[in-house]
Length: 288
Image 1 (cartoon, helix red, strand yellow):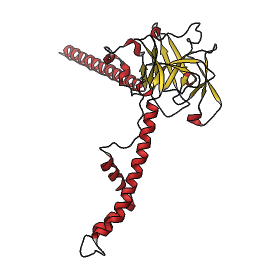
Image 2 (cartoon, rainbow, N blue to C red):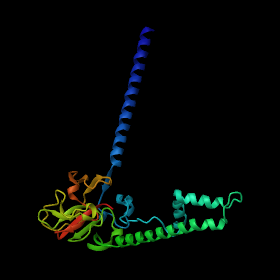
Image 3 (tube, one colour):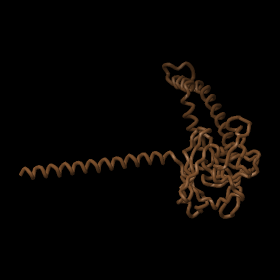
Image 4 (cartoon, rainbow, N blue to C red):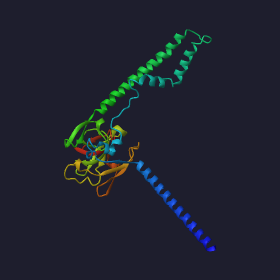
């Protein structure tokens, strides 16, 4: 009987130990998965759009990214009146005059005719609404002008660079830029007509500086004797998510043989900058 008790105790202890070990392993795996998910959430994976035509667009991972169209307007035709009225009634001065006008409709406290008390606040709110509508109309025209600016994007169907509007540029497109042209989106530089793979930029629209800055082609693409062929690009680009820091950017490019090539802000062409002293520059859109 004593032997049986010892045997059962040992087996029970072993079962408990094995259960705790499996639980620890499961928890470790879950922790690793959570860390991987957090890392993946802070990364952006970009592939070439040329591998996905119109029929395979649903398989393209770039379809989840925002378009290049900008919209700075606050109102639309349907939402102007309620939204503008809501914003004006959040101003203390307007609330004060509205309350005074409403009190005049109470016979006990009214000082003069109730209809007359509504005239000042209605005039003020009407003039403010006209001003807001005029400013929003100007923003709409400026947005439309920028969205319909032209740039050259590579088309697999035409096997050449075709002109498209800025609003039609998507993440993963290959854009060709020439001297004195404005950059339509944030682009990773893959080719430059310069022998050393350098592209000169003017960033006056971003930081006000008129001196030219140099951007270099990603390592491995700078020594090209022939022009860049977008259809042969099969690499996957992994970089950080968009942020407000203009001087910080890092990522890497994974080739088909799993070799990684790193890059930083020195290879990024920011939207709004102007190409200077460079005949041709080609890159892939990273942020739109």
